[in-house]
Image (cartoon, rainbow, N blue to C red; front, side, top):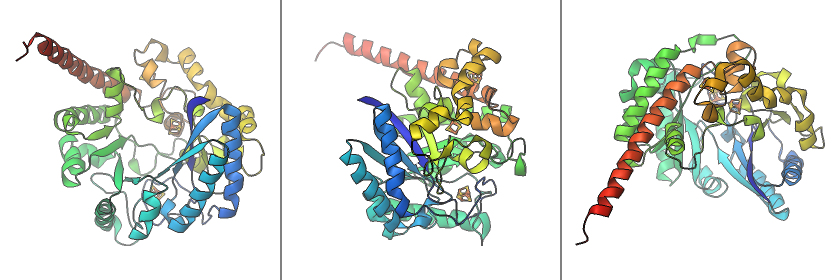
Length: 388
Ligand code: SF4
Ligand code: SF4
Ligand code: SF4
């Protein structure tokens, strides 16, 4: 059986209990019914079987996924896992939550279904994540308290930061220090922002100057190498790039996968299938179909006209963009379709963060070379040191 992994970003609701400025979700009060879990599971398992795939990763997101409650997850996860085991397959579950409604009532399901870990998000400085009452300051205070409570309950928490202008203004050293020193995290990652919603409508001034962003990320890479790399702090996506450039197996983010359409789909609470959460919430023209209405997911994916554009994008880029002459093509593949589409109104172009990626890849290459040199020197020293 193939060892490939298939990943499903599952949105059991698009409702949310907070109000981020840059949110692209249409927050409809619709929730995935547990009555539909067996049908959803069957369709996923049929697809895994047809493709000879053993394991399926389920990334539970929202809206805010915790709105569904721990009992809902225990029921849904239990039903999915039993059905998978009966057909010789496996689901691995991951949870992405804003943490705001975390309480000890979640601990059993977090330690069981989610293997004792969760992912959450916090920006530095936080100016865009807001509670309905109290704004960004109250959000930061509540989130920080919940983070402490979850960690005290033995839950490993990974944090995603979305970069915005105030992060760049704060600078890499202060940014790093907030996550690593102030929050004491050993696992966080930075994401580049993009506007969801209609193409070309960059709302709220979230577009960043690419030269400034590149300088910030290059600086952050250096700070992490100096202060975090040898201390066991994971900072994505830099850690995966170091793995890649030192010749180790690397778990690169989806934006740099050969073709994200080979590995991901997203399904929302109504059964809509699209490439990932950004597409399923923002771009109806790019829906692949409905998993509850169409009996064969494999057929849906292979015949969807909307999906064909994703599949053909890498070939189009090497034919029509300068990616073919780029020395980082084998790691970048032209970048992310949704970042491209939301900025340019087409996905058939290279990622607008191209120049940022080049700076980050080059920095990774330099740091990786230094690490490899040090390793060789250490090995030689060990060989020439006479035994005591
Ligand atoms: S937590 Fe997520 S879904 Fe909720 S408002 Fe913020 S970005 Fe939107
Ligand atoms: S469109 Fe971009 S964010 Fe979505 S799965 Fe593909 S690479 Fe990832
Ligand atoms: S870094 Fe730019 S030119 Fe190179 S593969 Fe990526 S998008 Fe294409």
